[in-house]
Amino acid sequence: MRISTVRRRLLATAALLPVLALAACGSDPKIAGAAGGPSAAATEDLVSGLRTSQAAAALLPEDVRAAGTIRFGSSFGTPPSAFYTDQADRRPAGIDVDFTDAVARLLGLTVQREQAAFETILPALDSGKYDVGTGNFGVTAARLKTIDFVTYIDDGQGFAVKKDNTAIQPVTDLVQLCGLTIGTGAGTTFESTLNSRKSVCTDAGKKPYEVKAFSESGALLTSLQQGRVDIEMSTINGLRHQVAQEASGTRFLNEFHRLDVGFALKKGSKLAPALQAAVNQLIKDGTYERILRKWGVAESAIKESQISPPEHA
Image (tube, rainbow, N blue to C red; front, side, top):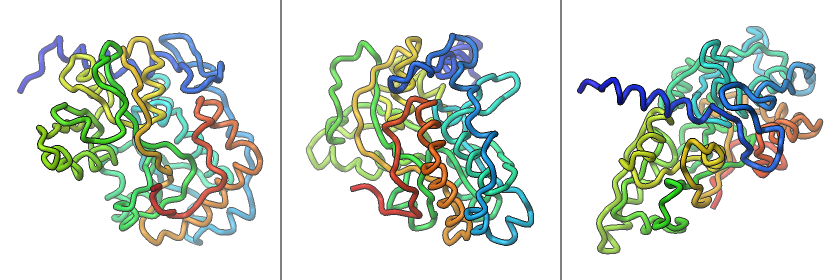
């Protein structure tokens, strides 16, 4: 079906909404920036001064050390996780970008970053296309069957609605969503959670909810704004950032389920101990806290990095 010119403009406008201004997800005033351009937070450099940690680098597999590079498959488009501060020069920024670059510096490696669709990254790890995947990947029991994780923040699942929607209350049980249309990201834990638990509505004798999955965050936001979906399920940090943008016209409902977030690796990857040591070094020297505060997500801090911990209860 051909998309009209008006529709194209709407999509393009919505896609830019999340990056128009970096308003605080938390209370750190450094996150606020002028609309239309990168904020001081987005351009603040906390990484280039880091030096190689010999202890962490010694844990690298020999082939990676010899190559001197680490290949990342990264999903972009959702602040404050990973996005472009300037669509013209496509300068990457965000939590994932800072931690990726910081860890690589501590390991004495050069980052080779390739943008990829979120739903394609985990399968590509098994094929060897990437060494590591980033995309705010939550640690779940299902993913742990085929993927290893090295954790670096705590985020999770949350809900948002249009600002003027007062009918939908904070979601503590998916049965509250029966009869509604829920928008979420394709290939995410949100999509799998919603699809795996659709029976809660029929079991309760209610009309099932409908799940619409979007590959682009801009298209999802447009659908919410125009009423084609009733409620959005996405990352806690991402939704809090979104609602801080006045132009989004959305309201954060609540956190639903917290999840560890980690670097994703092929099951059994020998890179995991080196990445874990690098993250723990960042925590120890204070860089870790500075990165979280830069993006206004200090509440997502973890005490130490773990390799493939169980999913949060």
